[in-house]
Image (cartoon, rainbow, N blue to C red; front, side, top):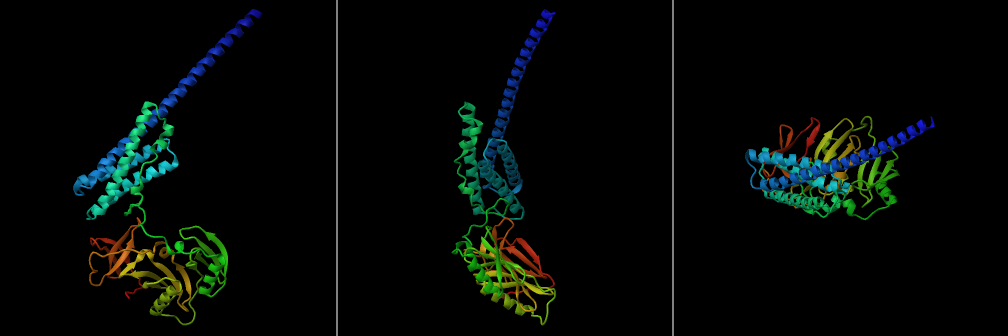
Length: 407
């Protein structure tokens, strides 16, 4: 009996040891298999990234030699597809977030700029000298990234570099030449300019900002908050209802929002007098060279689009919106943020004089690019045509209760 128990015990121990050894071998093989799969996955991603950036470099360089016909459309479409593929491959590699953001910006911008050229070409525009220069800058940056990727892959293949060190090995790619590219696209930078006036001005205290606001409005205000937005500002509540913001740099009034009367009481001002009042308020608010371009009339108020007018050009990116009471001209609403964010000294030159009946105007596209246009009115529709090519860039239909002023 005891012998039988002993034999069973020995047999169990041997089986357990065999099972443990088998499990260890299996785990080791599984770990090796996973490690091999991960390396293969990363190898494939790196190869795809290298291939995509190489094709992009060649195609982008080729674009500057022509923008006509199907070949141009095919090339730009291929660059866009390769930029998407390259971005996907980069995301599968062990790169730090800072490296990914830097390379994604280049890859996205390359595809997006070529898409912009394709759209411009379909609208009848030709690739200009500035576009060719931009293509060369993008091609150079893409080529520099591709060369770094090739040298890093050689080090990985030789065992001198691990994938975990790939990000550091790619550091130093000079992307500065594409950091200020401006065009009308999703990944564009804003048209280069100086800092806004509030940012350049000396800082003010809360009490100084409060005093400025109260003197302008003629009513008490109470401090609410301090914000760090595009224009750092102090926020105040108004004792008669409403809220306002004053820039922390320079103490300039940026926004006002006050409650309006439910119904205009007493006599009512007319639209021409409203225009005069708007321009007087601009002077009080340190907004020089403004024109009251459009005024919309409602039951209780007038709302104006006030535009800087410099060197014979309406600067719409810097426009101010303001509303006043229809009964006493009190300021009900103000938004001058775009003026203080955008208004810088510009060197604008029209290639040709504005046609008869047209005004010169600067617009900002959805991609933040600033373009010179000729503004004309036809059948209550404002039409903005490119000053360089005459193509329509934007239209605005005037409302029945809206007045356009041209002086």
